[in-house]
Image 1 (cartoon, helix red, strand yellow):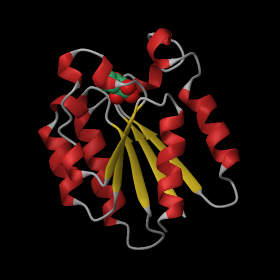
Image 2: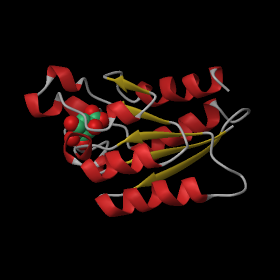
Image 3: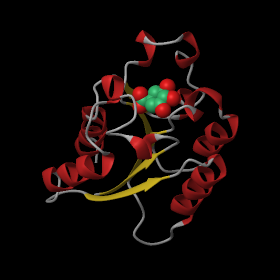
Image 4: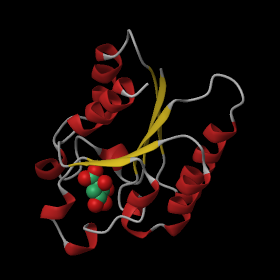
Amino acid sequence: MKLIIINGPNLNLLGTREPEIYGNISFENYLETLKSTYKHNVELYYYQSNIEGEIINKLHEINALKEQKFDGIILNGGAYSHTSIAISDAIASIKIKVIEVHISNVFAREEFRHISLFSKNCIGTIIGFGLKSYDLAIEYFLKNE
Ligand code: DQA
């Protein structure tokens, strides 16, 4: 199975950014753990951008692959999840299934984080399990191959 994790703005700072909310492990470190956990059954790719249009371009690029297609996308859009109609439209425009993830429990935080413009275009949303949210998304794809 071939999956890609796409992280949006400020998620490159995981490990040092507000560690009381997001923990103190960098995503690069966590990615190594994920890759080794799933090394027998998942080819796992990773992309991070702080730029809205780059995230959209990446979604289009993945969708346009004719060979070695991806089986799923795990998307943490960061703050763009609450604001970006453009990324939401991109998710709706592609054929590959997208799971939305959030590390923190956005519903226990400020009200502006309670709305996601992405959710209705995703197959599901996993929220609030820390970095384990990404594991849960991978598990879903594996169990629904
Ligand atoms: C986040 C939650 C968002 O509200 C926030 O802007 C982020 C991270 C999360 O993973 O908990 O950047 O998506």
